[in-house]
Every structure is written in structure tokens, then in C-alpha cells.
Amino acid sequence: MTAREFPEAPRMRIKRVYDEPSSEDGQRILVDRLWPRGFSKDTAKIDRWDKHLSLSSELRKWYGHDPDKWEKFRKRYFQELSVKDAAISDMIARMQKGPVTFLFRSKELRLNNAQALREYLTRQMTGRPAT
Image (cartoon, rainbow, N blue to C red; front, side, top):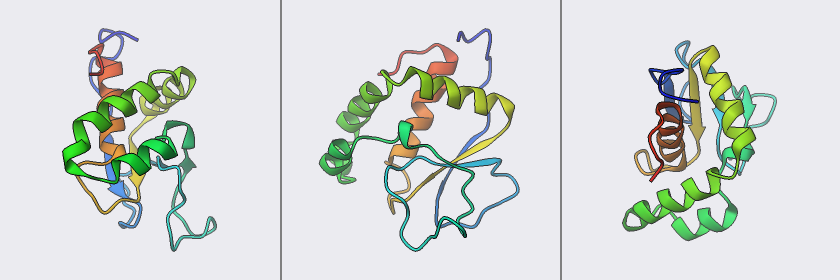
């Protein structure tokens, strides 16, 4: 997909899965490999659990939300995402239909996998390289 085909990034929000759902969330997509503690599948307000876009267990354990590892984490996560063409295409198609909110479990609000995923997808849609 080129920037010409998709000139603006769709609305991608990011929230902790524990935050209250909002009417502005659109489709709520859990992007963590692990299910959030304290939620049953019956009561969770999650429309989709997309494990295909979550990071590997090895990368999750290595990163450990250490801010000093953020840049290396992003690069490694982008490498993992770069071989998931079908999952990326599917997510972009979902975003073209309306807003999405990526849900994550971490207490770290800025340097987390959902933020990195949003950056990667934005770069994919605008034709900028994911570095």
C-alpha cells in the first residue's frame, strides 16, 4: 500500500486494557500475547485478541519494559512484524473500516508494544520505512 492510496493514518488509539471502554474506541483489539489478569473472556470488552501481532515471548521477557532497551526493542519488534504480512494486511483493512483501539496490559504507558505497533502500522500505511 502506498501513501497515495492511504494518505492519512486512521484513528488508532492506545489504552490499557484495564481502562474504561469508550464509545470513541471503535474496535477494541488486544495486542498482547498474554490474556489480562482479572478478566474473564465473558466480561472483557475486547472485540478481538490479535496474538499474531503481539511480540514473541522471548522479546517480551528480554525487554521487561526497561526504558534503556526501548530503541533495540522497537527494532527487534519491527523485525518480527516484518514477516507477518497477512496479519499486517488484515489489521490495515480493519483500520480502513473505522477506528481501532489497541489494548495492552503493561503499566508502562509510553514505551510498550502497542505504541510500537501503532508506529509500525503508521509507517507501513504512509510508505515510510520501519526503522
